[in-house]
Image (cartoon, rainbow, N blue to C red; front, side, top):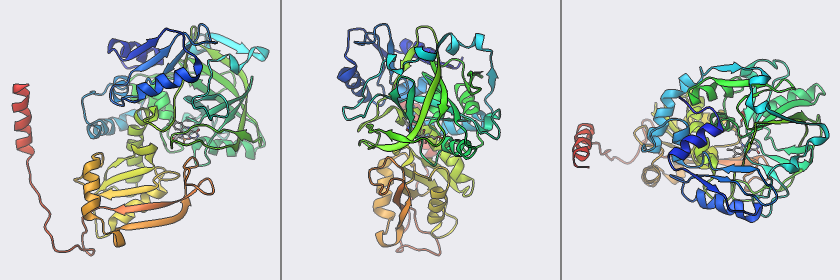
Length: 473
Ligand SMILES: Cc1cc2nc3c(=O)[nH]c(=O)nc-3n(C[C@H](O)[C@H](O)[C@H](O)COP(=O)(O)O)c2cc1C
């Protein structure tokens, strides 16, 4: 049986001794962040944390790091934990076409655990939630792991046109939040359409979403691809959805659902917030959400995420699947692409292995990647390597850069391109150059000094060695 909600994942992680419950009283600041960071120090095996005794928030539970280590990620999505990253990539790549066909099922509100408890009107108070500043320079309280659902006003019931994204939420008032949504994201497309009509945009965001939904929320799928279907495919079970009272479909097994509206044309200062580049985002005008209704499960788990100058949950939660969707996007026009590593900083560095059709074809691959959904706002460094190079093997990639890159020929700088707004190198925000690095072996009409590539076919011996090792271990 696949894992279909946060509680199911925690239960499974507990059987694998991957959950630490912190029952002693902790201060929200600075204790929680410090524990979370300590767990993030182990990207391979770091545990999930559940804080059960938070000063000022009696009776509430705060959950972190459920998908922050490879062991937790592999548990959630049923992947062998002992495999290399490239092997995990290959497994996910094989599963991806099936993921697209994942099934969703709508249930009635009465059968949706996320609607067991309802908070409305004057009772809405976002400050009742276990909130705190993750980093001391944050400009307030943020929800770091929300799965945000919006619909296209021209096709509000079409799940393919519905979007699930992860965009940070800042608490502004008891029923008001900020929403940072980058211009290149599908959620921003929806917002433009609603605002063009002069209407507020209905929105719902979940906290403690099913793990596959949290993961898909961060994947740059095409506009007409459904995160919900892919999430269902990824979890290997139909995904149960329910309509929120404003008509937005949400996962029925989310811990919390916040329903509201993004106010048409309103922008107010939001931030600063400690972000994944290891720097604060600064303060910028962002959208405003009016919260109209909160629903949650009984005894709800509030899920947070830490971002800062360290390994962050997104690295495991979404980066590997981002590699798969990026591969699909880049292959569309250059089928010669073998694999794409978008693991570094959510695809700020793209390492692409590809077959070379003719001399300098690596540049075609890089231009294509930059203009695909993988590269818009990402792909600041695009490195192309030969098809036999494992793009996840950094030692090998750097070796190829050492011995295949002619600095005067193989490095292309694209000035003043589309950048990622949180990158502190952007100036102005959203504008940054790019670098293409061709680390492939030149083919005609390009040429290299007359050298011969060393090649050894050792597949048979590798399998014999594997067998002999298995016999002695
Ligand atoms: C932990 C985390 C936090 C993120 N926060 C934001 C954010 O605040 N604003 C934003 O626009 N994108 C943010 N992103 C990136 C988007 O979620 C991601 O690019 C996603 O693919 C966007 O989906 P969309 O293109 O379907 O809208 C975040 C990603 C992660 C992993």
